[in-house]
Length: 249
Ligand SMILES: [Zn+2]
Image (cartoon, rainbow, N blue to C red; front, side):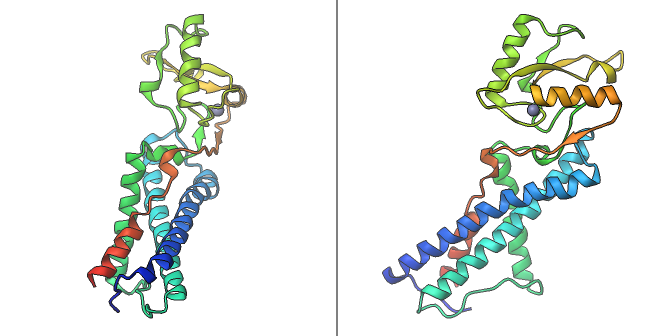
């Protein structure tokens, strides 16, 4: 591996290369999560009705998405440096046969899962929501104990509207100012066992309609969803690690 010496001439190529890498990682990470939700988990029928399985699938998607995004970001960064910086002739390229490369890739994936969690993400967030059960965004801390199996009281509706505006619909995550929220019983009355207590979760009008149709037709239905959240932002830590490894070399 060629040693890379720091110089002021390298500053601009380095900045351009790292920016390009960050852009690549920033675009590919949420895209991979979106594609895995719509074209892998949804067709396979994986949804939030089985929460442990959903969380496990979400973890794998974040791990793989983080690894692939980091790989593409690092590869692009290195190619841009090679293109722009005449002093650099060789930079490491990923190889499946190279143990160091695969270890680095796994480390990048693990770092992505850590950042995802630090930014408030839960792995179930990227799994399709089953409209009849707690959705991908459901959080017990953002719900209310239901006073009865009947429709929510005026006071409960007021609190649910506030929870919906702050945290979004528990099924699809929508939380725009114009969204109307309903107090959704979980578990729903139609699926509740006599010993179970119910809670109210904020659910948007759109998802509430889908839930009603799903329960009415007795067909389990799940929906895909995608909303911007901070945990979808890919942080360029792998690029810093790559730069640090070059200066150490
Ligand atoms: Zn919704």
